[in-house]
Length: 170
Image 1 (cartoon, rainbow, N blue to C red):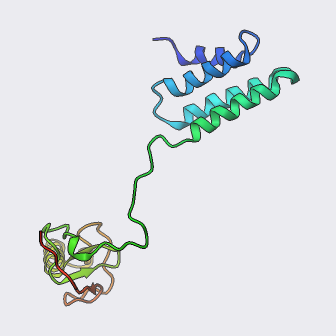
Image 2 (cartoon, rainbow, N blue to C red; image 1 turned 45 degrees about the vertical axis):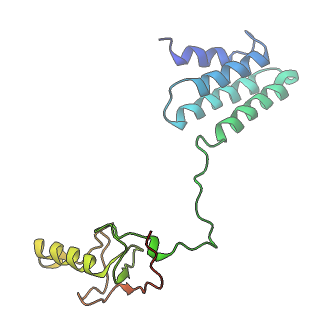
Image 3 (tube, rainbow, N blue to C red; image 1 turned 60 degrees about the vertical axis):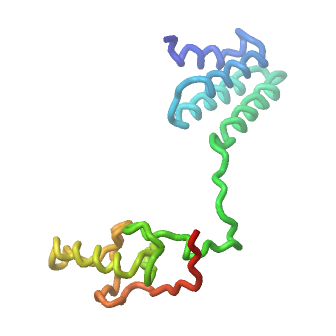
């Protein structure tokens, strides 16, 4: 397998090829290799920027344009943006499932960290975790993300009770 350094060197030598060939080689080098990190691609851009500044003033503008084109190509997202629900649309609680029992939450509660669970599931999870680690190490924690539940008293303190207004079964 040829080393990627030699291809980067070829891309950085403007006297051995035309500006258009340099642009094509640089694009192939930065996009066609199996580099997993973006930092390696940025080093290639630095090579191209050095080559553009070292070349003559007549070809500097076309070399700079080639570098800008490559930077623009590199800045395009690799994956299309994930489609998310519009902020104006609210997802009904009845379509949500508890991350512990995987059913729609019965007497749902909202933790300070933002997780919605069944009140009974939360109580059971916190109680069993505290039984395993009594004392200060056994502070009440969210069963989803393990954030400390400030104000937990075992009777609903520290969480917000939610009311289900509509349940839709299919």
